[in-house]
Image (cartoon, rainbow, N blue to C red; front, side):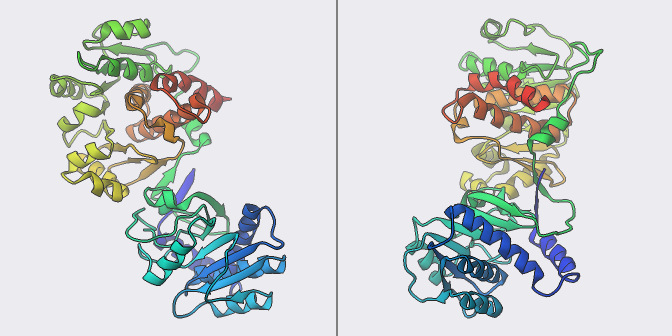
Length: 455
């Protein structure tokens, strides 16, 4: 599992470790990992031009010591000091290896962003912002975090560094996983420096985690013990939503799918194994493509006292006090639920998904480039398995059915939402082979993803 810790947690762990190490040892570990990453990005060091943007904090020190290591291997390293001071020992190490401090840097092969560390506030000072802008188009390696982003909340407010690669130390920070800041981090490489860290507030499932959470039928399983998922979706205007939601539900992770709605003929044509009759279910999916009766359908589903996936047209009718609900809004829908603007949600995604989960007392999944799943207690899982091609009409209907199947199979809402989101993203990657996908193709690829995880 990829863990992301807060600044306070990281600083406490660093202080505990530094108390046991010789002075400067921790910075040397970080600098060595940074230098290796820069060398790998460049494909070699000798003769390459490296520009260090150096602030007054420890990130500047990491950059300077890494620059000294690169200069010793033949790189032409220049440092541009931004601010009133720089790390004296690091600067001496750089100069001692032939590096230079410059006011007007040349055109480098790579820029190392050591302007602001984890203690910085969102935004850059005008001088730093101007230098960063002047180097647009040059590959950037950020030290620990891209300077100018909100480290603990993923916000962006003003000028900031947009990195191609971020080399972070000890653990991921929240800004590496949560958008919009995560988009500014580029590829993130983690360097282990030996920190002893507590439980993280934000995590991202990896393939092994998903495999461990998947519901697997036992030798005596039958369709009813594996769980029955009911789907109340579609309408005369949007019959396709019912087909796509039942496609996600029919991925094989539950034992049976029941459909109730006006699109039964279309659903049966696509999935003849789906039951078009009333009966007991272990979870409901309500809302995709719903009609005028969606409020009544949601109320009836909640009255069954089983987990209920609430999506699309059912979301405005969600009520607090139903912990078995899983709400799956996109940014605009979450904004309506909370009475704020879409722009506010997109700028502070972590804050708003947690707020919604606390208000409704249930799991809330905020769809996006990096989907966020929040439990009512504030724990958050981030999905990073998706691809941009997944932003296609109907994909959310498939996700709803998939999560419904996992709920019916017995996963708790928080696990069902985060595992379903991961599988959905992985299925899109597999279905598109790096290119465009259709929602039908994503649904059809879920089984192959599960098989791969089991193998």
